[in-house]
Image (cartoon, rainbow, N blue to C red):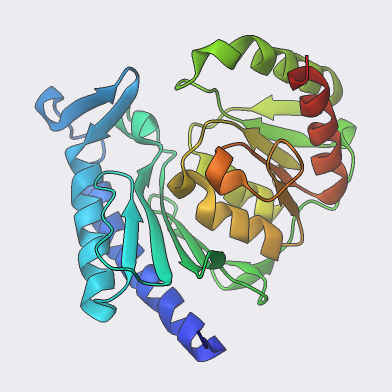
Length: 269
């Protein structure tokens, strides 16, 4: 299908409007949740009324503009057409942070066209930061161009990660990777929001990021941001199947390669 830059800009504008509307609700309900507003989907995997309301707002806004588009969203997995345009939405990334009053969470919206990421947006409501990217047009924070870290070595970089709470049987290897990176990197941070970790990597705060067993909505927008900011994004095999495998490494070229080498060495055993 033929999509031009004007179309992509329109998609981005709609994503931005949707995220801002959802952000209003997230800010209003932050630190105001009671236990009845929180459900445990699986062990240590929670959803709140704020997640659900945010998703409802985003889906409604997108479908009010593009009723024939498909949507893949964390809380409802709603897909209703056979469209080549697929919106991938995390209405509240960092739910556990949100529940505990930790001010580190975001809205993530991406658009995939015929299987290729084309638009990505991450909105940080409390800081009112908007990270955005259109394929081939660069990455931006609040309208200003951003770039991955100029550092190309682990020993001068801060690295971000998360822990694989869904797949406990790989935790031993994961901790070996963590230890190896701890010995070589300037430091390691675990923020609790994969999409923000990727946004900060695109911005050059983190030199690199890795995590496994993620879902597409955790990383779709952030992956595009890092690539458009001049970085490398792969799965643990060095390929481009991260949205399918759930395993992702992102960062400046040199840091990405060092993390990839460590992960492949440890996970092959």
